[in-house]
Each structure stands twice: as structure tokens, then as C-alpha cells.
Length: 306
Image (cartoon, rainbow, N blue to C red):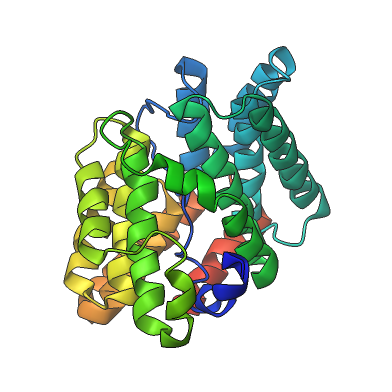
């Protein structure tokens, strides 16, 4: 039996958090493990500040010069994903572009035979990114199949964390969520024995270690997932607030981080949540690069959280 058949129901519960990489973002200068260099750092900075047109102008210029670059194709998919998150879920252009860029990146990476840690990490990200897109559209079986397709590559990365730091992030997420699947779905336990077992403490330790990383991408991703784990799953709102506050402090223009900070505050402090709601609305209105449609989307997201 394939892993994709085993985790369809867990995926329904973990729709927004059983993802290897969230790509939630940072506005800090990025020492990216996905695409290295000053131009990539600049593009990521624009993405996380919701300057999507500026980000795309950099990405498309680099992609025109490097059409066979898996990592720049992945960056192009990242721009499309950001547009989708900004309220264009039903937009054919951005969804088609996302799928085209992901397919191209995967094809290029397969030709490398994944001989380097960098290519292996990028390959895992490609599949995790595709999984996230399928989950957003409620395509659970397709999402599970995407995870199943890269399970060997995830397993290959185990034990190599000390030689390549980013593997702490992917391994940490795998260990935590595989443990969670084992705990919550007793009927699939015999099948989970076919895969590397989960380990809650190890998973959380790996993620916590990455919050100290000098790489802004790894730091922000680990902070984001710890926030989501403690908010959505562990229901430890004090710890969730700790990570949300750090994310917003580091990335004051990131509306996704601000939204989660508000949601968490609703569980802890109603008075403080009112203040955060005002700050969120002010940030939406102050972000000149957002279109009217995008502003409406983020305001609807806020109203849905109330």
C-alpha cells in the first residue's frame, strides 16, 4: 500500500500544516537555500512585503537568462503561489503558471539525479509545494500522492542534517507529523511501520534549532511552523504567541503573520486582540502595492477569524 492511501484522512485534518515547506516568508535579507545570490534575496524580500509585481520583475529577468535553472523556475512558482494567496485562488493564469513552473523545476531536477544536498532539498520542496497547492483546492488524494512521490528523497536526507542544515527543517516536520498521524489514526499504524517512524520530541527539537539559524529562510519557516503547531494542534496558545510575535517583529509588513498573531490573541487576550485587529487593518490599507481585490481578500480573512 502506498503512503498516499494512508494519509488522505490525516491530510484533511492537517490541511494547512502537514506541508514540508510553508513558504510563509521573511522580509529580512535572505541567505536562501533555494536560490542563492543578491537578486534572489531581493526578490524574496519583495514577496514577503507583498510587493509582488516588483518580485516578479526580478524573477522573470533571471529566468529569461537562466531558463534551465530549476531554482529560478521554483522562484517563479513562488510568485504565482503568492498571488494565489493574495486572493487569486480561482485565477486561471496564476494557477496554470504555478503548475507549469513546478513541472519544469521537477524535470530539471530529475536530470541532475539529485546528487547534491542542494538538489535533493529543492526536489523535496517542489513536491511539498505541489502538495500545498493541491490541499488548497481540496484535492487530498493528489496531495497525498505528491508526498508519497518524494518519501524516498525525504528518507535519504535523514542522518545528513549536520552536513546540510536545511535538512533539519524537512526532517523535523516529517518526524512531528508522522508521530501525529500514528497517535491520531490507530487504524493506519500497521502501514506506517513501512516508513521511518515519527518522533515528536526530535521533530520539535529540530524545528526549534532552526529558529536560531543565521539563514533567514530557515529561521522564518521554523518559526512559522512552530506557531502553527502550537496554535492548531498542541493548543498551547502562549507558545504560539511567542513565535507569532517574533515573526511579526521581524516582518512587520507580512499580513499572513499579522493575521495569525490576531487569531492567537483572540484565544488569550480579547483586549489585546482589538489592538492587533486595528494594526492589521491599518497595514492592509497602508500597503500601496495591494490591489483593491487583494485588500478585500485580506479584510475578508480578518472577518473570518472573528
